[in-house]
Amino acid sequence: MSFIEISHLKKSFGPNTVVHDFNLSIEKGEFISFLGPSGCGKTTILRMIAGFETASSGSIRVGGAEMTHLPPAKRNVGMVFQAYALFPNLTVAGNIGFGLKIAGKDRSEIDARVAEMLELIKLPDLGDRYPYQLSGGQQQRVALARALAIKPQVLLLDEPLSALDAKIRVSLREEIRALQRELGITTVFVTHDQEEALSISDRIVVMNEGRADQVGTPSEIYNNPATRFVASFVGTLNLFEARVVDPATGRVSIDGQPVVTARDISTYGIADEATVALRPEALTLGGGEGDRNTLTGTVEEVAFLGAVIRVRVRLREARVSLDIFNDPALDLPKIGAAATVSFKKDDLLIIDRH
Amino acid sequence: MKTDRLGHWLAILIGTLYFLVPLAATFEFSLRKLRGVYSFEAYRVVLADPQFQSSFTFSVGLAVVTIVFGMAIIVPMAYFVELRLRKLRPFVEFVTLLPLVVPAIVIVFGYLRLYNSSSLLPLTNSSLGTNFLLTCGYVTLALPYMYRSIETGLRSIDVRTLTEAAESLGASSGTIIWRIILPNIRSAMLSGAFLTFAIVIGEFTFASLLNRPAFGPYLQLIGANRAYEPAALAVMAFMITWACMGIIQVISRNAAAARP
Image 1: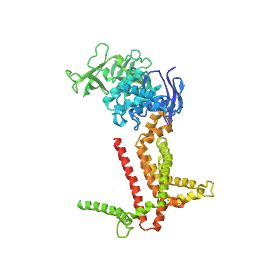
Image 2: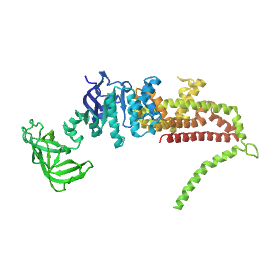
Image 3: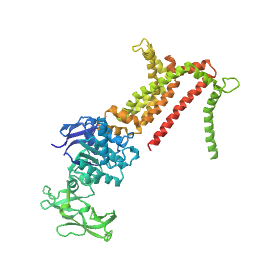
Image 4: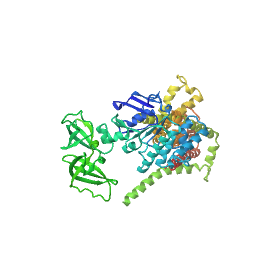
């Protein structure tokens, strides 16, 4: 049995159902992210795990114990909020030791644990400061230490990096992941930022309109999106309406040009329509050697994005974008020039059947 | 443009004179008790009067009880409205404004009908009971000011997130209010407390009709029987109110300076 078992969870606010029959098993020590746009239900599920929202139906079990209707104070769950939520009237040490004080721990035990936590978040000398004297990143690290000080069985992170600037966000997410690995604590992380989710999660739950569209490792989510929504939400994607030419050999037609997919389309019929997808980084300008597929068209736009250059090629009706690494020695394609785009059979994803 | 500016200054001057001339005249009159010289004799007489001391002490004590009693009722109510029942906020605001609309004399007559010596709950039968009734009346009178102060304080902090953070750390509702909410709305509570103090100190209608030896009825008594002492008392009452306002300002400024 998994450490966290969420079964048939449903949440409605009046006539609006925001979480529909949600099921998920989370292993002990796993770092799992809920990824999705605003209003997809990811935070609501997190809040139901924390006990801040009551489930309309279904159950949440942690470590084999039924938690669905337990008040938040009795769940032993650590929570970090987007807005830090540090207590303004308490010092950093007071904030970190708050949960231990509530639990009736000895002064010496509290002091020792607070010092340990301050070391862990690399702020050993800031125990006497007040929250308003800290930067956003420092405040969020204190919030993390406060949540961890009580030795919770689960750590819940509700978009903890959203309020921080880009550089701090990247360094803090790495710190969070390192701490999580070090402590081995089961962690649920909510974010709308795909890069964050892909970079630190063991598994990702992609949420869409209150349902889990796909649950998988970052690689599975990115390389084999299960639905059109996952494909479009995670990463940049070229989507095409293709026509199946030969299901047995994987031959399809994109904008009138024949290509082959390595994916199994044997269940499709001849002339069936399907949505297919190509990641920009899977495409190469020129080429077509070996068994690579090719599409031909004209260069419509060249955009310099720093590390990569995004080139948009117009086929007949459809357009395809591809990324090439920036190289000062590279001759950039000219707008209006004829171009050939090539890709491997494995990279042609089949998303939807019509 | 120049005419505009002149108009502004004129408006300010008229307003200032409207407020300051009567005050200055009252103050000047209060100094005339001894014929031919200005002195603080009227103040000395008032301060030496045992009835002044007892009525003032009574009203100060009542003000403190009113503040404690009012806060004990209003803080948890405003907190739970802010936390869980935000939809009820307009209704609660309406109810808390009622004491400004319903005259004090109407409220006190209502109290006398409900709690007189022949009623089911004869609070007016004893001094203690009547004092309790008076305190309840004062809490009602102070409700608009106290509730607004507390609500402003609660709106300045993220009540919901702080509560949830404390809950996730194992705190009960009582602990959250005592250790997290109250310390963070301290300046708002003090503002409410000083406003309540200023109201209770000079209140006449409730105290007079409930026949309590408060400062308000004493003011009226002196006013009816003496010439210079009422003016001295009026100036002193103003000083107390201004002192309360000044303290509120200092507290608000310090709170703002402490939390940039």
